[in-house]
Image 1 (tube, rainbow, N blue to C red):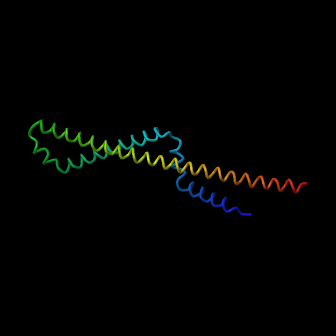
Image 2 (image 1 turned 45 degrees about the vertical axis):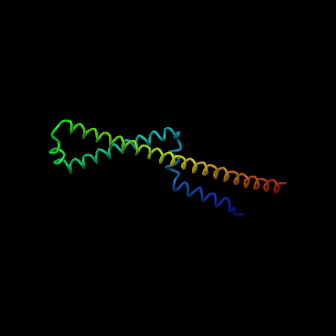
Length: 143
């Protein structure tokens, strides 16, 4: 009386719910544009903080050399310009990588959720068929 297909589906659904469901169900409530905006903003904040921390570390390590080596204001301006240009290049590169990564991640989450929903529908159909067959057997026994 055990239905192997039903047991397999229930096991598969249970494993998905235990491993991925919480993260993916929260993300599935967003449109792709909203999800990407949130992820891109957090990526931008992270790359900015990381760049500032790297600048602080480099400046702390090389402060004496930087300060004594620069005697003119134009040298300070060129240093600041190089720092800004380097930041823009790193930020743009990281944002391109982030967009590709999170877009791919969102697509995989949607695919997983679509598969999960399809399995739920299949399980529901199996249960309906079992219920209908039980009800038919009960009706036949009453007559």
